[in-house]
Amino acid sequence: MKSINVSRPIRNLKETDLERVPYLDLPAQYDAIRSEVLPALEEICESARFAQGPATSDFEAQFAKYCGVDHCVSLNSGTSALHLALRCLDIGPGDEVITVGMTFIATAWAISYAGATPVFVDIDPVRRTMCPTKIEDAITPRTKAIIPVHLYGMPADMDAINTIAARHKLPVIEDAAQAHGARYRGKRVGQFGRIACFSFYPGKNLGAYGEGGALVTNDASIAQRARWLRDHAQRDRYLHDEIGYNYRMDSFQGAVLAIKLKRLDEWNTARADRAAYYNELLANSTYRLPEHVSDSESVWHCYVIETAERDSVRSGLHDRGVETAIHYPVPVHLQKAYAHLGYKPGNLPVTEALCQHCLSLPLYPELSKDKMFTVASMLRELERRN
Image (tube, rainbow, N blue to C red; front, side, top):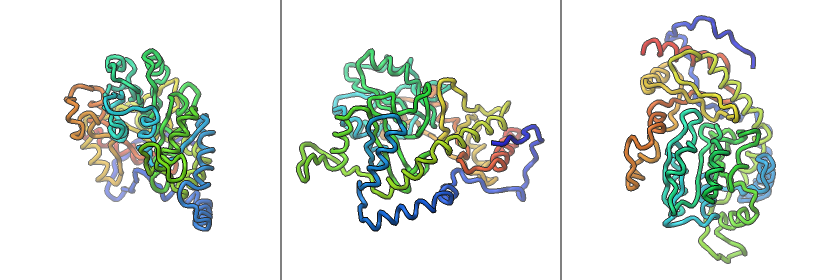
């Protein structure tokens, strides 16, 4: 990516200078692949193989190979993938699963759907993922699994987490919903847990044109059970040995994902280039920027800055035509739905501080350097005003 002279003066922006900068631009991505997408969807319509058809099987094989694992089970959402992962490990009522409060709530929903209880631990302030030193204090005789989350595209510290998990004989489930293609110590995420779970929600680095998800594993028995469970637990047609679900992926999503998967590494590289450019533009500002971690390659699902003036900065950007997002304003352990667990403000201080200060800036492969410069100019202007 060609560099722009970041030393040029940041101009004061007037209303006539404003150019809308969307947080995400999926239509631009579609324009680049429509010549492949439309024939693929037409082929499915002509075949009438709409649910869990050949297109989904083809995608499963390609995504398993991409992740470096033996098996991929395509599903209708990342939430379903997490739920089935817990079911395949026979986790249920009376059990506890350790995870983080800094995540989309689906991570905890899956634990609750299985009938188990989520136990939340704090995050590391640099990675913004599960802090390994907090895990052992949370382990009880009822603990049956650990779910680290590769937040914002940054891998969790899997060596440290797996060392603790092995010591206590606990399986690890990777929540890789935001980390398609991210690497930890040179290996793609999805290879570090007993099971890993991905979401293909449209805004993800690898996004479907609707809902979608996948469970990946090297365990053939887990993969087979997940395939049964996703299809009403049918080992044989109309014969059901346990409670199952309608968690199948539709063929349209498999076709779209296979087309996008071929471009995923290129898109992730573009995201990384843009994250580096933001780092240049915002260097030496009062905003706290994402930090580099030498053992990991983030895929930059989100570029998240931190500022105590988050709400006023976000409002100022909005007034100037720049869309932003907050991932996430209220941590899971303080959500009303989990009030019965008894967590209070201050229990997870690093998590809570990030929720109060985080602001996700526009970041996607099609984002132009000029628009990024505009965003940074506005942030510098707002910094001076605050």
